[in-house]
Length: 140
Image 1: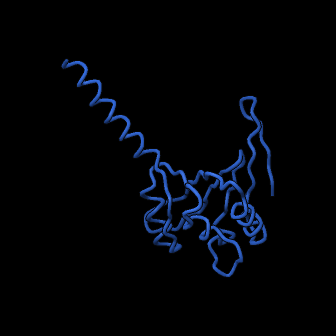
Image 2: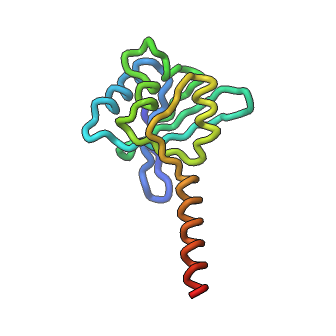
């Protein structure tokens, strides 16, 4: 089911994914893309000892919302699935605060993500480096 929404003058493009056929189609599209797209990923519904309820995957200006209550996009029986994408070194996956998402993906779906860029860690590194640089300048 594709949905388009207008917010602040910009079209937000997203697709709610609720069936196996849509999972296969989207994953096949990603896996066959050249050059490989950079993927934005976020997991929602994280509660202690509860599985993820929604996974958002964005690329090429479109977001896909996988409803994990209705479909298992990691199902190894599917010819193309999210596990193949998230474990692939071919794609960079951008997360924010990957720690809890990582734990949930491993513990509930057996998915060990590869090639991850965590924006929260990047922010900490940049902030620390900037602080060190500016404190060094003030001492000179």
